[in-house]
Image (cartoon, rainbow, N blue to C red; front, top):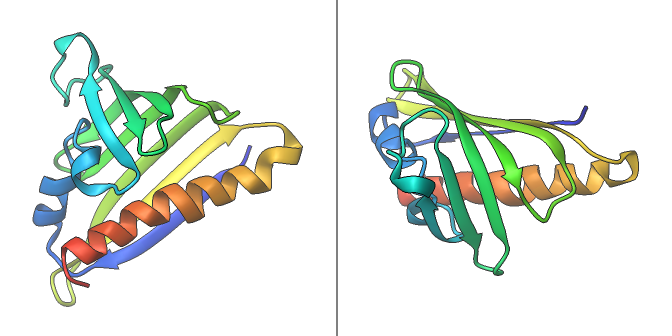
Length: 145
């Protein structure tokens, strides 16, 4: 099963970064590829099991389910329910860790998924180099580092 791992350090304390990324429905506010998002059935965006339905700027629709969220451990875990990408059993986690030297934040974004072997390299590049890195780069720009 392929595993994607992308990380960076952001020049802001974890509490500020968490305030920006915690909202499961808030992707359009910080990820440049996301045009709009909504939580289905009026559920709160931090309720485990809620489903976000969002559209990418290219028009594609994605549905993801919140599997875990911790304000103490600073992570959000989710799965893909529907997507144009040919993956199965996709589970991803965005995790923040304090960097005490300079009051910065270490961010890790990981995912594991199933796919056809011939698509593995392409999908790992799409998630890691495109989606995850694009989001982390946006956070670095927002926080100035």
